[in-house]
Length: 172
Ligand SMILES: Cc1cc2nc3c(=O)[nH]c(=O)nc-3n(C[C@H](O)[C@H](O)[C@H](O)COP(=O)(O)O)c2cc1C
Image 1 (cartoon, helix red, strand yellow):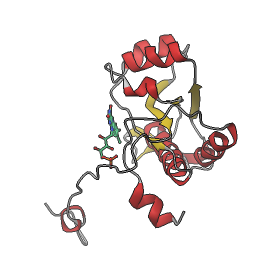
Image 2 (cartoon, helix red, strand yellow; image 1 turned 180 degrees about the vertical axis):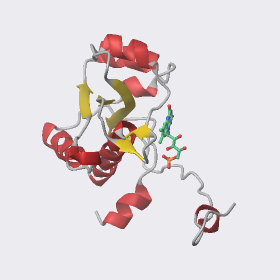
Image 3 (cartoon, rainbow, N blue to C red; image 1 turned 60 degrees about the vertical axis):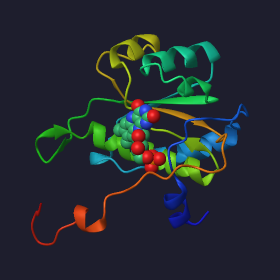
Image 4 (tube, rainbow, N blue to C red; image 1 turned 60 degrees about the horizontal axis):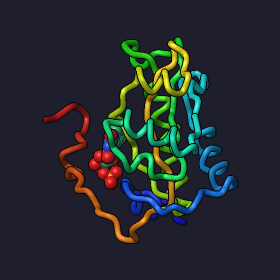
């Protein structure tokens, strides 16, 4: 698919077909995540692929009961590792780094005809316990991945361009 088409077509998918995602397709989208840039090239990420039904159900429960998460054939849990890199001198680069890698994955999934949805509403502490994630590692995002059930997708609105850019200095 054309890159601009991928960007334009992507939207969050919250209902999935039962069809499994072939391993070669999964590995292509994970390659896209692996290729992402990161501060100092530390690549402070780890992706947990969950396909077991019961485990997916438990994850969905820990995502504030968003049951569609567990209905996707694969749930990818993106984790952030601690890193000494700072952004702007005020915060760790981990969230930024992992977010970039996840968005690479999301766009690569779109390119493969797959649907995804970023999930930020989850119980980090309990998810970590369920998936045996070490103390110092945090969950950054949960991404259900699967073929979309519906052809047509709802397009969410965006702010106008003039609302989000300014020239030479910050403007309200
Ligand atoms: C950090 C983050 C957290 C999100 N958390 C959730 C979530 O918990 N549940 C959900 O259904 N969608 C979630 N979303 C999806 C957003 O609602 C969605 O991206 C936004 O409304 C724009 O719609 P679109 O993705 O279809 O373009 C999240 C998105 C981001 C980037």
